[in-house]
Amino acid sequence: MMMSELKGQVAAPEVDARRWWALGAVATAQLMVGIDLTIVNIALPSVQRDLGMSDPARQWVITLFALGYGGLLLLGGRMSDLIGRRRALLVGLTGFAAASALGGAATGPAMLLTGRALQGVFGALLTPAVLATLAASFPLPAERGKAFGIYGTAMGSASGLGVLVGGVLTQYLDWRWCMFVNLPIAALAAGGVLYAVRPVPRASGVRVDVLGALLATAGLMAVVFGFARAESDGWSAPATYASLAGGVVLLAAFLAVQARSKYPLLPLRVLADRRRGASYLAVFSLAIGMFAALFFLTFYLQNIQHNSPLKAGLAFLPLTVGLMVGVRAVSRLLAKAPVRSLICPGLLTIAMGLALLGLLRADSSYWLHVMPVFLLVGLGTGWVLITANSTATLGAGPDTAVAGAMVMTSQQIGASLGTALLSTVAGTVAAHSDAVHGFNVASLGAAGFLCVAAVAVYWVLSERSPDHSRWKLPSRSTRL
Image (cartoon, rainbow, N blue to C red):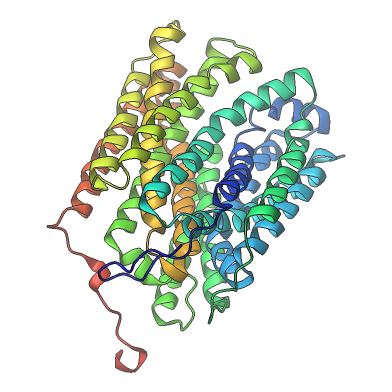
């Protein structure tokens, strides 16, 4: 049926009877991608022994996935518009499964690293198509909150599940199953896409801004690479500051090109919208805190308290519980409450979890000190992710895939920065004290940052802040 036309808005599209099946398919697809961000972390020692990898090469198992995924998300969003979101979903799932098979069958480091890089590439095509499908399938406010709640549960719990699944597979089967497990998941998701996601004509007038794509991809990859090198080599290493400086220059050139491009990869109106800008800032800040907490707690549980990979993975389950509680609460409020009243409390809840992490000791009780950290971080993550994803894609029209891609780009950059920066802080403090004290100082710093971010998001969304979405770029003929 068709909704009546609302004041100042275009009538909503017809509601698809198979939309909930489509939600299940795309949520499964995104869960697969999210799990792969962390599933091999626990397996790395086994991977290194089996394939004879050096210590420097070991890090590239993580870094190459992050480079391909974080660097190509914007291009993936535009390609989703170009070829159609259903086709993008199927190509992304097929490619991701093939890359996983290649990595799982690796006979040497080069084969595994190639598989990981290709996983990132196809994941970058898949994620924007997932968000575009969700936004198109659930235009009604009441259902939209519930749909994004289910999607947010899958996305937010993926990191914790990745650690758990990786521990189980590594301990009881073989590290290769951390890659092979994606094949049945991808097949299930692809079957759901074929059944439930209807083909739609590609967006009219879509072209690929080749120069913009090159600048954005190179710039984002340089930034992600620079943060990865900072974690391993330090901030003063030539490779670190050269990559970061080059990335900033390339991204500045990218924005300049987008302002003048007839077919921009990232229309500046997407960034200028106040609500979207606040959503990107919130996800960026969330990623700094959340991924730092997961990184520190993974190390703490295994290296300080000497838990097995399986036991360490099981310890992450409260993260998923907290996230599900947060998702259930916020999905009911999404259509009623102001965005700032949802995002800001979520950021402050994560800050509380990080503050508790700052009080952790080597002999702390899991039930009294570690579990509350997981619960608070999960609860806040659910609140922020659902609100940010729904807000960023709401009313984006032909820019929906790109607007969604910017959410994940913000998360990827935040995760890379947070892991590198806070690991450096923790390592510096630990050199003069111990590892746990290093975690304490870095976690308290992250908690303070999230409090500042919550204030910044509140200001951006307040009526007193300038609404740059009303700015209009001058036409090419009027520019000096």
